[in-house]
Image 1 (tube, rainbow, N blue to C red):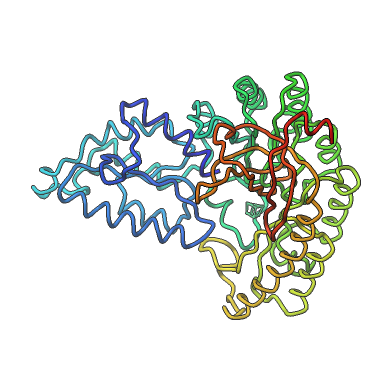
Image 2: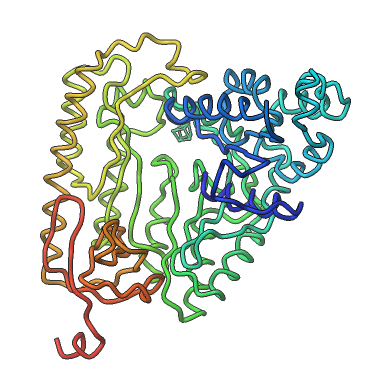
Length: 457
Ligand code: SF4
């Protein structure tokens, strides 16, 4: 989501005549698209802005912050940044910058500090508006911005913003607002454009992507209908590309969604389904609104209808009050669902989330131990999956060179990391056949196979 927001921020700034630079030191306008999921990311925002504010003593610099901002951080950011605004107000950024004028070193050294500039009535109004954080009021304007895609073969398409679920550990509903679905006609237009440009992966984005259309029942298509239409568009194009979506909520994961994914070759056979805990009581405490039984039904349906699909999840260990027995229940579901990948997080309180009012009673050491135990469980299942790939040939999207630069690497349709024994970087952005020769815990390695070799095999 953050990358996708960046892709829409860049053209707005460039339209004003600003030139992009990768060198922060030479920028005269610097901004942050914040993420509040982890405290660490927010701590970095504070260290950056202090550094930038020091620069203002000797040079012209304008600063802004947007993205996922908790109300408590927002109040502090208003004092530190020149401009603070919700992402949905992005189209107003040029106006805000123009109203601001340029903060010159002279004006600063003459004692005209930022507070003086805030006296500008328009700036005051904008700041007050930011402080109200009307999160989703103008989200449709935001969606109208033509993104400047960072990649020419992988794209992110926002289809929905905000969340109505209110999991007790999460602050997203307070930073992104309530669920709003983007008009399907705009989504189809953006996707058709990407298909025409030969994009190889398209990821539909939303905080609660599969609750698409719930806020516009009767006026808008449902999530499975949206997927079906995209599948039809892919079929008509005759092109090879994979469409994914993230993140779905188990409560809204219907059989119909799985049936549609099974029916269309362009709908990627990889499903990321966050479970968070394998214990029903803890799921209730997390306000997840789904049971282990419901989740099990979804996994059974995926295994039955799309046996080749890979399954990813998110899990929190050490949530408030998590007993040894409840943690063991999470281990049991890890064993039962045999995930290809699980993003495991040690619980930490997020200011603004309901659980931040509860005592964080699981000691750090226990969280760490549970994290390591679960990671070991994951390594066993992912290694078993990866070993089964050895000897078989897979379609792999080449995404870049490995860090050391000796090999190219990519992802299978199921998003398994593949190291390819070739240094041919002209293949980046293409889908190739790779015969898997070896497997490790979280990746596989193999060699390129030509069409002829594939046919004679
Ligand atoms: S579903 Fe829960 S975890 Fe996901 S964004 Fe909404 S509140 Fe947060």
